[in-house]
Length: 213
Image (cartoon, rainbow, N blue to C red; front, side, top):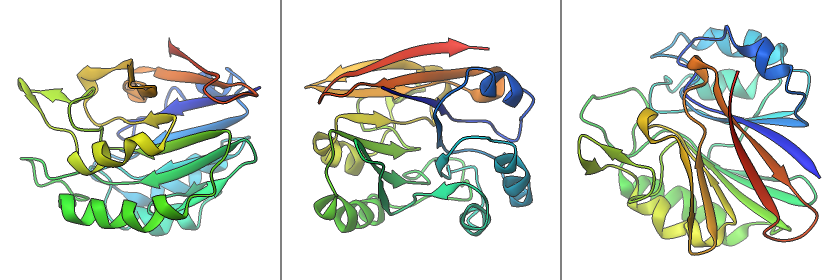
């Protein structure tokens, strides 16, 4: 079994990191909004403190230069790419579909679709196939202001995965099973919220705990 701690929406608040590390995960997944509109130069010091492998995508509140900082950090940046960890394959998508707030890293649905269309068909499929995305799929854990605000492109590709790790909508912390695909929003890491994902040896053997430290 592999235990992965999913964090998201740190928004530059890293005071809970030691408590997250104390949970002793085998790896970290970071689903974006590491900073709060920057600065991006906090990225390398943050990931140098993590003592296990970490895999991340930026969020809509991370400036685009966050991509370069992630590439030069001890973290693996997965925006627009994939990685195979043996029993687990991860595809990453950073940023978000458009918001009303003109945040630094937003993309059109067409741009999101193009990224996923370039990666998903070439996936090195494994026992567990994971999409690590900041934006949630449209209609799932994506309610804000009484409306669904998730990405239609993410929703279109989610059936290619066993697990979708998302974030973005702080109030939509939770776990949903949609047609055999688990979707999890771990909540705000800035507030000590996270999710421990237990990957078993067999397909679909994925168990998730929502935790607060």
